[in-house]
Length: 282
Image 1 (cartoon, rainbow, N blue to C red):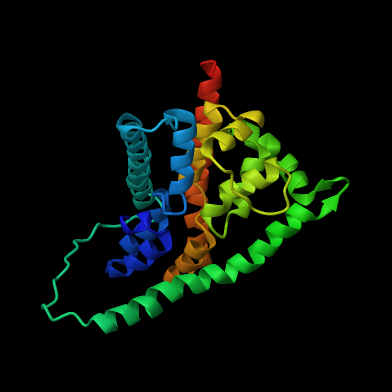
Image 2: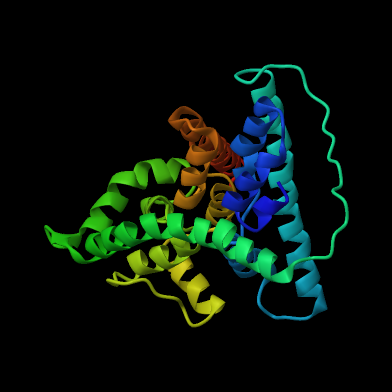
């Protein structure tokens, strides 16, 4: 789980150390509930724009850190809850003991460690990322630049998803950005900006103040911001993570469950929070 804070794919590869096949599956299927490095920028930016402010100072920094810690603890709590749910349903069984024996100490072989890290881990993950990122990048470009009936394909798809997005406290553009962000979570916000500004390429705003003004102009409220954070924390894993799950489990069934479980929890949380906020007049 802790490795998942850096990269969920790396965390799933790290599950190899677990001897019990059942408990290895539990760890793999619930790893995506903690935010990886790709999701932290989105969470931090939204927290800063809508709940902390960009004035600076130790008080602002402390509040931002406190709120982000709360989001992380929510992810950890959901990891434990999902693990318990799976362990009493589809992955029933007796828990096993876990013993990790420390190997005998030897002088580190720096060159060997670097080579193994590059070939066994870095290139392993980057290769899978590139295999999906290239065609996905082409798809995003086509959707943003091909026009049908006076509007881009991206706009048509966003309009189609808009009713579902409204139920979840967001809009069709945000949902479409999460779908097109399948190769990497880092591009979700740039896709949202691209769609709102009707640009044909990914872009970044000059400041958080400009970004917030754009979001507010497109109907964002604090409820929208919370739901975007909730769905960013809980939705399908990125392409690299799913390919890693497929390799580690050898099953498309478990891979589909690993994608469906956090997505269902995230969608349910957004719908419930939106309904409660509307009931209370938020």
